[in-house]
Image (cartoon, rainbow, N blue to C red; front, top):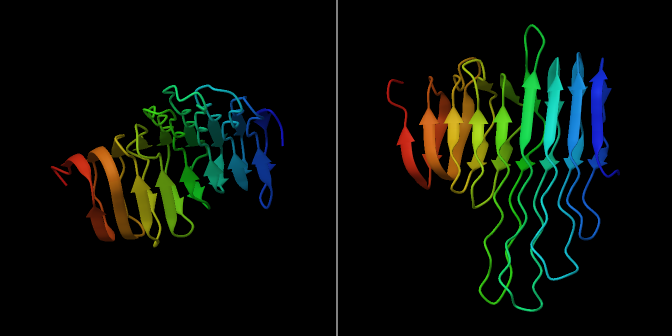
Length: 232
């Protein structure tokens, strides 16, 4: 437990089985977690939630989570904004979720998802309820492998889920649930090209953009503004 955690350069890092907690104290935003290694980066749970409000004020933001290693094996990440507090009934917005960014840098870069990711914004408050905070964008800059059935949610408001590059492929014989609220979901790399996914469910999104071949046991898009898989 700390106000924030920064590891600028290490050969390896392993916190598996333990929780890195930078949740804000009362009336304090969550602290960022930034870890960079040249070799394997393995984390257990990471929590960077915004601290609870004790006074009449807007919600507080969660800390960002940035993981960059030769390969990355990430446990569950919770980076949610805190709720606003309005005992005086004034309209106030919730805090923003923290952005989550993962990058693998070795010759065969792989990001393994060993836990779910939640970056939803906090609830608004007031007689006329304020806006829910924006969700944090989740970005994968390299190939992703599911270690088990996984959920990624940025909440009901803005907050994208991005498999960012052509080599940001996605594989693993497990189910995947994605919730982006009004945020976009972008698959730039092939999905299931090496190991087909199980059932993929997109519960909500603005634009869903599929820019490469997509192989899965099933695909369900419950709510989206637009969907584009033209050319694939």
